[in-house]
Image 1 (spheres, rainbow, N blue to C red):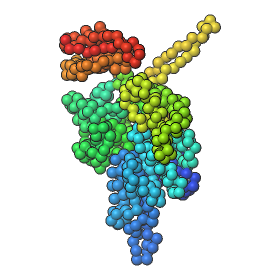
Image 2: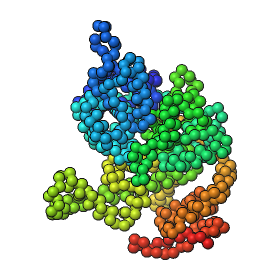
Image 3: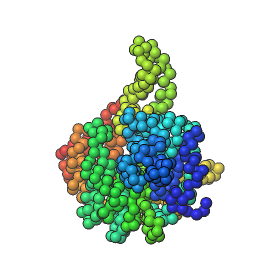
Image 4: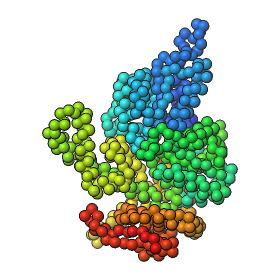
Length: 582
């Protein structure tokens, strides 16, 4: 088809519908862009017909109180679950029934609950919305278990995956040889023609300055931005006269860093209002990936989405998809900004990902080389006789893992990268890291060209500009051209210098005090140099770290100095920095 349609209901065929409900050929993946009515289709064409009364016209109503089959709808974000529950409740009102008996809406994360596992077993139809979750959220430690359970369920019942970004789940199924069907409407649906793209190295404030006061902007901050820093960004922009609010997950971590069910009531209220109103009241909204799904913003004043140093293709498409367009208003358009903010954030993400992947690869190699020998060795222990096969397998894996991380260097890397044993041994998480590395590499890549001179071949390495690489990404994801807007170097320099003076006055002393008694070497020393050099302003060049003399000249007026000593650490001689108060 050459015609672009707006909604899934306009293009789906009876054959496609029957294909979804036939389970013997495997899971059905339905791919359609964000904002094209996937949720509406689920309600109107899958849930409502389940309550249709076949005896209607013989003194009974159109709908019956109990569904003909049990339907389980699952989603990846609390916001999506909230929205679906509201949609189901509204559907019940439309049908004139009190409650949709036979329809359950739940989050994937509840799979650790035995009751949830039972729901999957008892359902006659399983609908998985935002199904890219199974790969893209592998960091949370639950995706492998829920994936296995869903695959098991698909052997005897229809399982339908809905997503705007199916590429990772399709690749996973193909790599694993998992039977599935694909129904792809991405080429005939969508609103890409309503979007304009700008790639830039301007920082956030420079972009916001260029936005008219009567236009709103949604800013997606880098994924690693903490809740505390989101609040700081808001306060900083508010001081400069902007109307700003911020949004993040309302789930709180416990003392062990796990999500134990405790919520931030204020943030829960804010997110709930965002879901209901489908708009934010301030001119600027700052958000992290907690609202990359499930929030439909139907606001013609929302004219800008700003992506700060993002590289995950699935997440980018989901974030931009929060904007919902008015199909009757051709002036309802969106400008999408991709910015590097003129710093090395993406290079830092790339380096971190590369280190993680290398460490996991080394562990996998160690595991492959030592698994069989460890298994044979443990069989000789009397304790092995009392263990079940599952318990013995877990013992072998734990022993191989411990032998690898008993080496000081490996254990140090594990702690630095804040990786858990579960993540290291989780194939889904490993796949996620490799996917992320695959996404970010083209943005920070180096182009290598061969040049011949007098029969000798030399290699010339050219660094490609990330802003230009963003242009290629826009074309790949949205089939659209984009324009480049470069920041004014003098203005940017002056703004940065003012910020650095303020940071030194407010933050430098407490930052230096935090290193009391800590030895700085390797990555910690480099991170310290980077912070002092680029964040506080000691570096003479943006591309270099300040040396010891430069750092001492910078911090001495504030009552501190660095002592450097040579020490043997992990059987290697290293230069160690010690921060001292004078």
